[in-house]
Length: 364
Image (cartoon, rainbow, N blue to C red; front, side, top):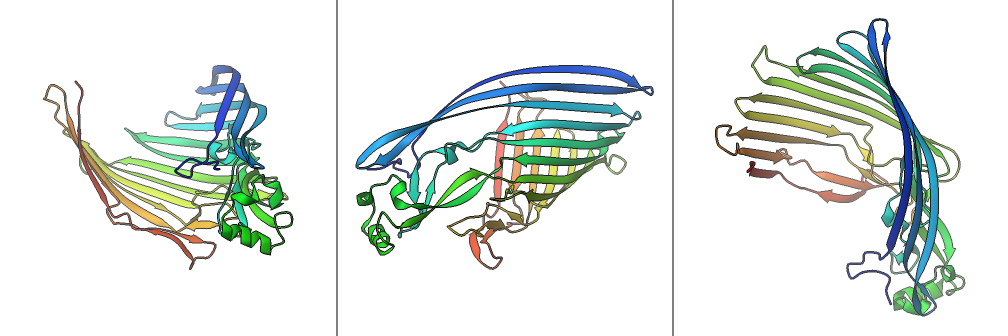
């Protein structure tokens, strides 16, 4: 008796019906002899959600169906002001909604250890998380395609989804004791039997606290035609910090490096385009807490830089104007390494090497 496919993927059916309406307005005004452009509006989205999946009751496999409804107002406001002929200032405020991962909502239970002490279980009652966003920035256009830009941003996120752990009696999991392996049955009996043994159930939950994210992004594009026509540089740097406030499970955005920068040298001319880019990400947290049954357990990813090359040439005189493309990825063979909680506890280590792709494209 199983609740999963042959690939061990959970089986479920998710149906969503969404109704939405929006109201928007635009305006353009003169302020001190310069243009002020305003855009604003509000959107309301209502979702009716039905999730069903197989679960065990006694010795029978039955489908459990759960319903969940939610609706939110999502306003937005954007302002752009031409302070001078070359400088534009921008202000934006909005409220956005992000739905939870459907795979985290499947009503299914799986054990991750031979002693049946740790289980993963879907949470069909997960709610979307809401983010109140504020951005302020501007661009200074220095000529041709060159510009310098700075953006300051902040986000206030509620209902962020994180891994949670609950201690649940085995008898409440809805799994027949007889369906377990002999090893799991023996382990549960040693803990007092099916009616007394407890299981650490990991599942996604909506965090009680509020997650605050703030940061800044600086960009610079500089043509170098005075050195060689078609030559140029691009650079970008982003710094991000986050803080969780409130009781209960702490919210944390994963996969975000506190510091990221990228630089690109490019040349375009005579039907040819060449770009050499380097991107660096500082060490980051790649998972929430409560990993592998440990309340403090989390997965981290080491800092990493990657060098890529992209080039193309177009045969403009041919009928279909075909282009030859060359992409070389990870030229320095940078490694990927993650750790579990501690920096010296390697979790994964991957050496992808480099990849070279040669292609041709055209229109017919």
